[in-house]
Image 1: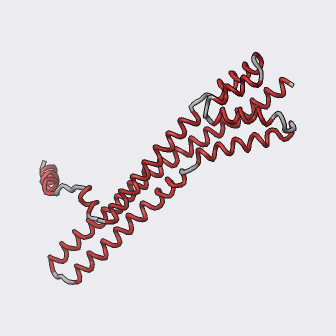
Image 2 (image 1 turned 180 degrees about the horizontal axis):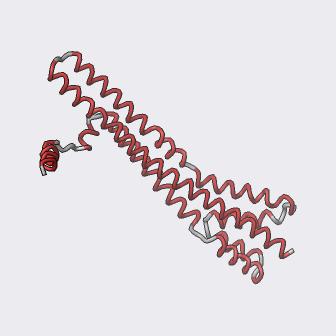
Image 3 (image 1 turned 135 degrees about the vertical axis):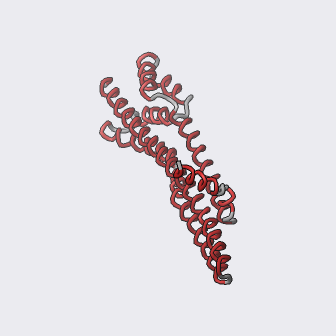
Length: 222
């Protein structure tokens, strides 16, 4: 009972800390981290929208529709149907149908792979900026902490006794605010980057399957 009372009494003496206020003590470093976080979410949302536009179709269903059109209505109808879509899978199939008319069969896959790589580049664009934020944000936060520590020790040099100890403690906890902010922004950036990379790998697998099935379809028709 006495131990519980002592712990409760100690807990009530701990002052509440506003982490946002502590973070904003970093001044220009804090505003830099806020700017990085805004850029981070902009690039992430822009990439999600791009992924949705370019990969919203099911490649297997798309190939089945094109195969049906080729058998019933011919090449022109299949190409016309593919022109109505701007997805990466449609572009790969549309250009593949064009390539097969003038490229030898042993060079066909290589040329189609080039088209697929071009489409993958559209998905990979700007993802590197998110990786940059993941690495830069913690370093910017740590820089703010170093600057804050220099200022705290500078004040300590001009004071003495209990006053100097209090000033040092206050300066240190305020300086740590930017490190906290930098780590939070960096963590979000790390998660977002790896999420997008995982989606790119998934799309790459779907593209490889689509190309393999397309070439197999051509071999069966010939």
